[in-house]
Amino acid sequence: METNHELIATVVKKVLSEMIADRIVHTQGPTGIFATVDEAVENAVAAQKKLLELRLSHRDQIIAAIRQAALDNNEKISALAVKESGLGRYEDKLRENILCATKTPGTEDIQPRAHSGDDGLTLVEYAPRGVIGSLTPITNPTGTVINNTISMVAAGNSVVFNPHPSARETSALTIRILHEAIVRAGGPPGLISCVAQADLNTAKELVEHPKINMLVATGGRPVVNVVLRSGKKAIGAGAGNPPALVDDTANIRRAAASIVNGASINNNIFCTCEKEVIVVSSVADALISFMLETGKVYPLTPAQADEVTRLVVTPDGKINGAYIGKNVQVILKEIGIEVGEECRLAIFEAERDHPLVWLEQMMPVMPIVHVRDVSDGIDFGVKVEQGNRHTAMMHSNHVEYMTAFARAVQTTIFVKNGPSYAGIGMGGEGHTSFTIAGPTGEGLTSARTFTRVRRCTLVDAFRII
Ligand code: NAD
Image 1 (cartoon, protein in one colour):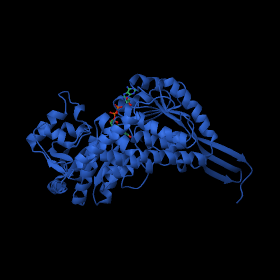
Image 2 (tube, rainbow, N blue to C red):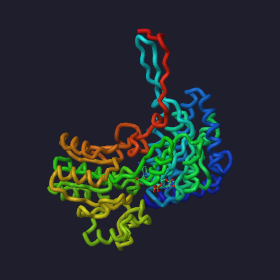
Image 3 (cartoon, protein in one colour):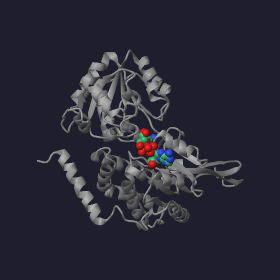
């Protein structure tokens, strides 16, 4: 019987050979894939004007077609994402794309507001920005494209993407598939696009292009700074280092399962994933034994933890990119440890100054730090979050402790008693976003984020009540 791993490998191989047979990866032309940034932007300008001529109900049909196309092609784009970027897990990419296709809000997010009174009627409308330039990360070359496309088009914009160069085929394929769906649904060609050879030069061109009205950067701090310095309206969705704090009032078994699932999804490459565990000493042993009980965890001895650290952290204190997003089996094999495919995460007990506590590792290797009590944990959690204002988790049954940590850490996402991904709508309430704008404060972006707020006032009329 085929193992899960072999089954996934077979699916990946099959869809990739189908894609090559279809010449789907390298197709150019009226597909949303352009040779130059200029061409993409000019087409986006024209397409956005045409989009505004369509009825809102037609825009809804286009959004529905985008969602369906993402779902119909999920296997293809997920397989290519893992193959091209070398990051993450096929089955988790599938989950990411389903989440983006189904839980990104559409035009319902831009419902106008109205005020009526003695002086008449005022309408507040969410109008489009125009043409948006979006720089997307290697970690989510499909999810970010699906999520941004739905949000930006629902708000009446067009978008030119500049995908990460190491995932450009994947993002281009995703753009091409969604573009086809848009055109088939009667939407204008060129509404979403990218250049075939996206790189840092095309990113620069896009950022500086005079016809780009708004910029969105999803990535590390440097690219967020690039768009913030552009002089244009910019949305920055940056890096995080999310702590998971466990106190002595928590349901420890539930906390353990949540942390294991949250930290290991997609091999820890979601920006929201737990990156370090902070646990009150009196419940640390219980937490670790419940983590082991999940059957998905390998506990590193102190000596093994040192070896893994030397492997994944470079001598100058940076994360070794070769291990980002890799399966735990790949990382452990390098130090001579073989684990079964059910294993998803390696854990180890770490001192406070351990580099993996402070670095955004984006791999399934998890440091666990002991603290004296909950207030020590809150102080340390705030420190390791490092002012990213991104994401934090707490496992506790004490409302005041949870409130205290949430207030102190001031993150955009704060998850209580669940895995990190609940905070992006996967098994948690609320919409999803793969552009979480901590630095610029818009939070989990949605259609409304990509609008200008306009007021339209009719004086002395239409107050009917
Ligand atoms: P990255 O910053 O290296 O790249 C992101 C994008 O910016 C890419 O398209 C890249 O080509 C471009 N870019 C990078 N430097 C640039 C520059 N100087 N000028 C112009 N463009 C530039 O990030 P990555 O490695 O692709 O993705 C992982 C990072 O993204 C992690 O830090 C993760 O936390 C973060 N992330 C954040 C969110 C969020 O919503 N906040 C979502 C996903 C990933």
